[in-house]
Amino acid sequence: MKKETATPERAAVPKSLNSHYKDTKYQTETQILFDYLQNYVCTATMATAATGIVQKSICRYKRTLEKMGLLYVVDFKPCPLTGFKAQWITTNPFLFPKSESNIQLSLFEKGLNDGL
Figure 1: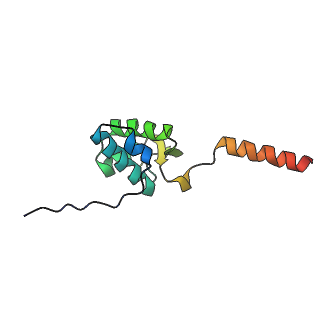
Figure 2: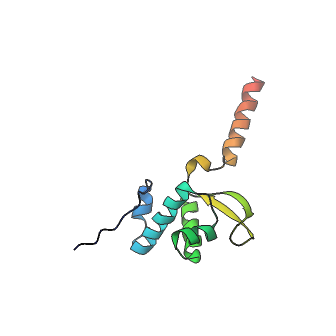
Figure 3: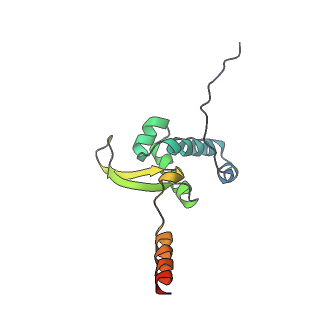
């Protein structure tokens, strides 16, 4: 008998995540972290507890996703698991903070429009 395994539905993973890395384990764990952070805002320690991915690896994947513009730190407050202040992260674009360049640009445009 063939044993069936359930696979959770995954969020759409950007093509760049699938093509940059040859190491299958790295790619899979990155996708698992990306998918988890689509639905939850948490610390790296909380993500480790939820996904089973080693925390040192999560920190490495976090940096990769940050460089790709797919992960943002949305808060800096105590982690309920460690009690220490930590970065709360997400890959959900609806929760990303507004970038400073957009704020500056909108202020600049408003100033031009008011002055004319």
